[in-house]
Length: 317
Image (tube, rainbow, N blue to C red; front, side):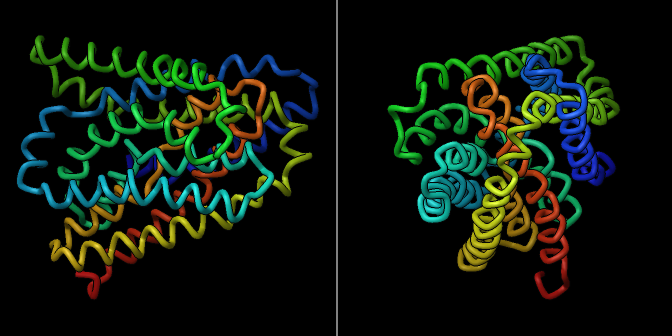
């Protein structure tokens, strides 16, 4: 997983460049967009299959205070910050605001564990928090989008809810069925080993989705490049403020260093593949929302790498 995460930014950047070149150079139209949802469903199926339900009870009960702080930061602070940043810094840019909200209200369910491990945090606790974050973001995402953009009349709420159910419910159901079958057959360890070998395939699915988005909407991306760059400031402010708030909360609560690392990583990492899958399905005629969500991991992954270094310093112990 370390190698996969290390290559994520350059591969996503390469997919952006390749997709734009294909869209501008070949005039393929919008048909590549048909590849986006299947690719992301495949990616999410691999991701969800790696979730270990058995870790939940064993780690959550003795660390209820850390879990409570994580829930407060992810589902109270993050939505409020997303709404304020969009309102203050993206006035008149409804699609960018929707994209920003969809990114910032969905806590990560995969690669943050790599950075938790690299900063010597409590990885088992991070994995135990993961199912909680996943269930809550699935339930609350439509509500947050409508409430925080202040534009309910312009958002197809029914389509948004159906998209969450379809693009997240299908891979979640398949992943749960696969893991249950492996458990009944006594092959859970073999499944984990297989999923470990398939991690690069997940990154390939993400690259396909990003390439297809930019191939289908290359001209929009070029025409709106200055608009997309406006996301950099709210993203930078969110990550900086959230890092500071998570570390301050950990110190005030008296958490041990490993739990401080875990809380910080579970709070600053965002779930761009989930948000991207929902946005593509729910807003097919508003490509700027999906394009905005591709910007997220290009900022987030370097931030996580820097945060891991800061948290692993001796004086952070």
